[in-house]
Length: 334
Image (cartoon, rainbow, N blue to C red):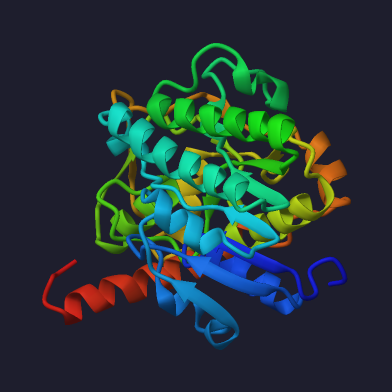
């Protein structure tokens, strides 16, 4: 708690999947927290436990003037705001995602420099890695070849954000921490996205009664998943301990094939006998996408994720049920 006690921290995207947990944890540590979120994907109810202890600003970070105003007076900026989407949407909208992602990040970084902010956390992404990366992926491969094909536009934007932060660090003395989260999930996911990420996409299809369950790809592609609560804890620790401009993977040590993940979701949702059909003509991304966590261990002081995949999936399934129930109650169907 010592480092954060009384420290003024801005969290962009602070009502979102990861940002809301970061906000809660900073408040618990005694920080003076300001949140900036346009509520396009974030939700104020995610901040219900700490809303009286924070300063909230609803604004558009594509507006540089707004960025300058909201960063003024801060000691640390956690830049977590981003328009993240699933592979189905991303593969068809590279230019759109490149432009929107880069515009917001460059504005936040420029505002931080203009207001002489001491330290900035930049949330990058594992999408910066090429499809043929080493497994597990070391951070050094984040600037090799093109980013993964399915998320190429988003991946290039995130690479540029990292680069700009590093340039500003050298030119203006800005202390920069960079994280590359891998497959973050949790109950605060924005289920209304038209093309959700892999875990919420499968959960929603199961709860809507899809039988047989269709899963994109071979089911053999392996991923490491980390709960948003654990990702938030790691991000805060890295911002405190490792603001040296070197990117850090944020993930778990476990590796789960997507086919096995789908079966686990069926079991936990009470549908163990439902058949699974794998759509091999659909995009599945890299065969392996697990992260080397050597630097993560160093940067976090040996932190180990606490939420098991079973526990996290139960939380997400419950949240998805509530989401679908609200839709049905509003007459929008399932």
